Structures are given as structure tokens and as C-alpha cells.
Length: 163
Image (cartoon, rainbow, N blue to C red; front, side, top):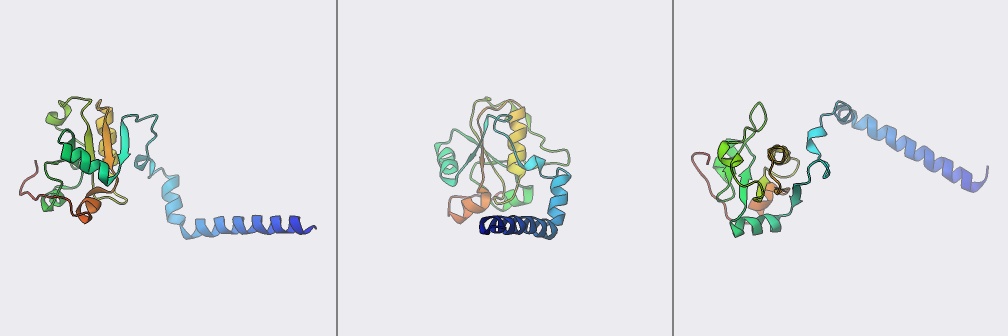
């Protein structure tokens, strides 16, 4: 066997072994993926052309401009403890997101900025999909969420009741 073939065979063996070890170590995660548990955490731009992921700077600009509706997809208790000033609270219920008529009656081309905790929180994306399905065409998901907003020292407000 030539040196090049031996090196290729060893590389292929290492790749195969790496895949097997990775699958064994993350077996519960692989199982969850196979059951389709992560389907809701992704979206295809072709299916949801009105949804865009945005950065902290973009979220701050839209909030400061006052023309976007800011929606907090976190649970009510988290919203009460602190939220983006003027944000409306739309937490998920057992049946998903029940969007109030006041939101559904807004102009469908008005920008909506949605956030949740940030990190691996998927509530904002789930709400964005729900709004898109309701006909909204400019839905923006602030991926850094509340954690990034607060860490940046941006304005926040607290409330005793959801808006």
C-alpha cells in the first residue's frame, strides 16, 4: 500500500471514529433530533420571507425610532421584572401564541421586533412564525434577546401588570 493510500485510509478511519464517538456522547441529542424536536427552532427564508434575524444595534435603532412594535415573548413574570420600554408582552400559552386582536389589527407592513431571553430561547422565533402566518410582512427577531439588551445597559422598565 502506498503512503498516500495509507494516509487516506487512516484519515477516513479517524473521521468515522470521530462520528461514532460524537454520536455516542450526544446520543440523547441525536434521538431528539431524529424525533423532530428541533423542527420548530429553525425556519427557511423561502417559507417565511417576512422574518429576519437582527442584531442589538438594529433592535435599538428600531426601538428608538418608535415606528416598530416591540414584542416580548417571555413569560409574564420575566416581563414584569424588566423589559424593553414600551414592549408588549405576548408569552406562549399551552396552545401556542394567542395573539390579541389589538396586535392582529395593526398594519401588516408595520415592523415588529420580537425578543425573548436570548441564547437558545426559541419563543421569539415561534411568535415570529405565528405573526408571519397572520399576514405580517416585516417581522424581525432580535436574537440576542433580553440578556443582550440588558448587558448593553440599554433602557429598561418594570411593571406590575403586563401591557
